[in-house]
Length: 343
Image 1 (tube, rainbow, N blue to C red):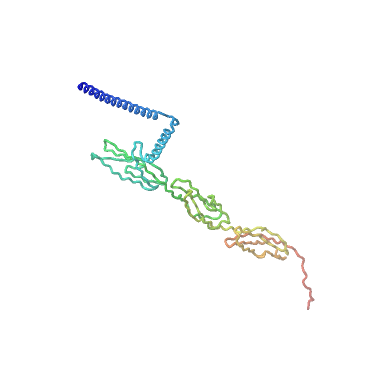
Image 2 (tube, rainbow, N blue to C red):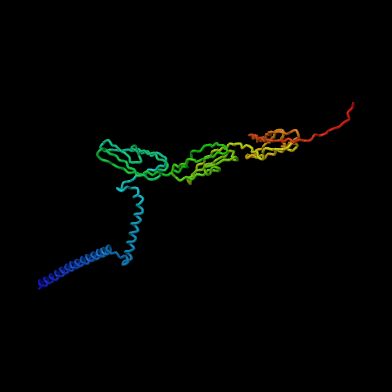
């Protein structure tokens, strides 16, 4: 009996142990199944989130996508300046800056691992030695290349030369003193150029503001002429003297003509004198009239007389002759005195 009881108890214990083992195995299998389901669910959600194009369906996901785009845009903006320094093949482009009218002179150091002889050259505007004398007006950017070759392989390096503008004033030539006489025409035209190629405005002071000056009898004197050339920023001034020599205008005598009078009549010579220069004129009349221009003829003065009228302005003299004809007038005898004769 005791033996039977022990057998029964032993069988019950075995059943219990097997049941626990089966329960744990089943629980573990169920746990593994639930874990696999959770992983599959997460993967499905991730896949749906990546393929979704409607940001309004999930505001959170739309905001995240927008933030992601903003980050990408900022990264691109930051990268742009660095990219500008590189060539198409992502090679760094060396930048060399000079000013207009300066010399570009590049020193080159080339190494060859094989110790081969290396020839190198530059593209325009550099010469073979890597030199370029810039001029005014060359402002701008120039992409040049340095090519080095050992006869078998070639290496090229690209560079950017930036020539900064240097403004200089216009240049004025053809300016010299002018000398002429009254009555002549003065012509003046300066030669103007601008090293930078800028548009130049030129002004000239009177009386040559139009480039031509027709002088007359009142133009004598010295004129200081100023020439101004401006490119809008800088200007150049030059001065010269225009000298107009006085050309004397002789006095003009008018109101003169031949005269005819009879003996006993009064002769009047009264010329009109004018002078364009405004000079003081001295007038003289020869005899028998005299400087006062009046001659009282007598009964014995018949005949022809040539009277010279002279006008002198101190620089020149003008003369004219006037013919004065005095006609004879016969007069009756005149008894002057009668006296008694004394024996």
